[in-house]
Image (cartoon, rainbow, N blue to C red; front, top):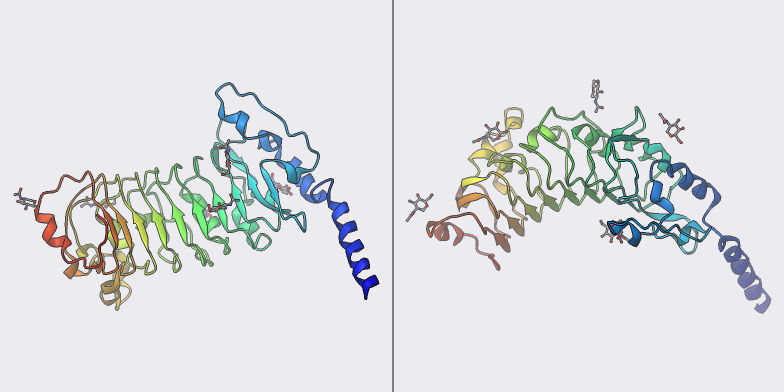
Length: 328
Ligand SMILES: *[C@@H]1O[C@H](CO)[C@@H](O)[C@H](O)[C@H]1NC(C)=O
Ligand SMILES: *[C@@H]1O[C@H](CO)[C@@H](O)[C@H](O)[C@H]1NC(C)=O
Ligand SMILES: *[C@@H]1O[C@H](CO)[C@@H](O)[C@H](O)[C@H]1NC(C)=O
Ligand SMILES: *[C@@H]1O[C@H](CO)[C@@H](O)[C@H](O)[C@H]1NC(C)=O
Ligand SMILES: *[C@@H]1O[C@H](CO)[C@@H](O)[C@H](O)[C@H]1NC(C)=O
Ligand SMILES: *[C@@H]1O[C@H](CO)[C@@H](O)[C@H](O)[C@H]1NC(C)=O
């Protein structure tokens, strides 16, 4: 019995020593393949924050010890890549997403702030969909991606959180249809873009059944945005601050949703629009009332932020109908 334990301990130790001088060879190789695009992949963070740019290179040959890389301590596989602000390119460029294929156990990938404008031909995020099935959090914020990227991203079926803030999403043409439809996506951040309407941003076949958090702060949306939101039955938090909403919010807009022409049951589905919403942020608009009886059933709303809307007392009576409201 004891010798069995000893043997196991020895096996574990020898496995451990096999890892201690580095991440897996193929992943290390893949990191160096990324180096021409993400110049600072083997540099420490803190030195990049200074305006002076005192770059300090990583000293370890074990890439799992680099600040921008995090590995599973047992398997040595890369689980997180923090490539935020790590490109030295100051002009727009196109990403070859296939370069991330070797990182099969990747959970978090940040490409924030790298001047990326799209993908090279046929090498976009859909390429990762079958192999990177642990990828849950993708941060593409502060780049120059536009609507064309959405179809490709929607095929990443393991994604739970997607950050597309501060890119150049506009209204333009709907994106192409895809099969996977953001199956697990819970959080979507789109603040600081130039979005005028969601109906034109997302293909009508795209379904966000699990979406709980949607941030659209700082876009160009008007009241018609509510008509595109009714299918988000699980939405808990919605941030529409600093847009162009005005007047009373009600669901006449829902009834005019373009898709309703095709779906006969549409007006009835609308009755539960946003019924799970707990937080609604409308600050920095011109909203002055709600007419819940007409369909926006905000019966679970707990937190409502209406600051900076310039409304008068008449809004209070319409708020009285929101029975679960806790903070305002
Ligand atoms: C990149 O992101 C990591 C993790 O969020 C953070 O600790 C680091 O400071 C960021 N680095 C830069 C240069 O922004
Ligand atoms: C993209 O990267 C993959 C994997 O390294 C490579 O096989 C392919 O040739 C690259 N494609 C382009 C267009 O750069
Ligand atoms: C991974 O991403 C999620 C969502 O953005 C974040 O909450 C979490 O802190 C990230 N993990 C690490 C280690 O940075
Ligand atoms: C969408 O489909 C059209 C026609 O099939 C194609 O020309 C176009 O490149 C596709 N766009 C994207 C972003 O995949
Ligand atoms: C709201 O925005 C949409 C999309 O840009 C536009 O078609 C519509 O006319 C606008 N509605 C109002 C009331 O301004
Ligand atoms: C308050 O606002 C409503 C809606 O804009 C308006 O109809 C009403 O006249 C206003 N009341 C006062 C006292 O300004």
